[in-house]
Length: 277
Image (cartoon, rainbow, N blue to C red; front, side):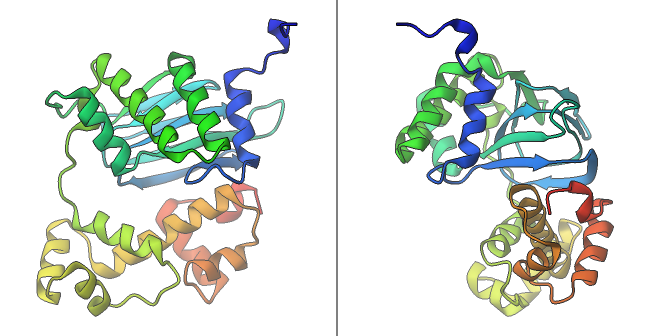
């Protein structure tokens, strides 16, 4: 017997079940229990997200969006965004499923699209999540079954359908950024005591070249390392309920007070304001 339509979970409810799926892999269900904002959040690679509860506001040089429950958005290229997350008044929760679009997914979409991609005008594209309901359901089912190749194919299909709607900028090659490369390096081992010679050895460049290229991007190695660690802390604050002391230690801070000061200076936000700990 068919299930009554009213009893079928909505797409957002189906996506929310991934929060408890141990096989879900590299995605984040972000939870917050208080309204809060963070400034100049660095996004280095394309990402896709669906708001499951509450409302997200995004502001940037070319972005001014308010995304309610059921809204899907794709960050098409590296950018910095001011973010405000507002919990749902009824549940008291803000929840978003966030999916980094890895190089394998973007490369697969380029092969499927098979046309030159233009650098678009929009850093962020917003659509109803139901636009890609079949693909998102396929992605969910593949993650639950640990079929990660199928999951990547479902995401690549979403990108191709996005291109069909005129948003092929997501497939345009990203301009090189040494700072982004260093942030990725540090994010893989945030607890490591990174020094210039460590980064030089991994990237195969001299200290002088490293400093010169970072200066051209208006940053320094110390600032880039600190930003990467704080970004890791931000992810832990959203995706776990660990105490601040533990989070600080996991990203390389021996002093919780020092961590809080650096976090506030970077994001204009107290870590405790997220409300998950």
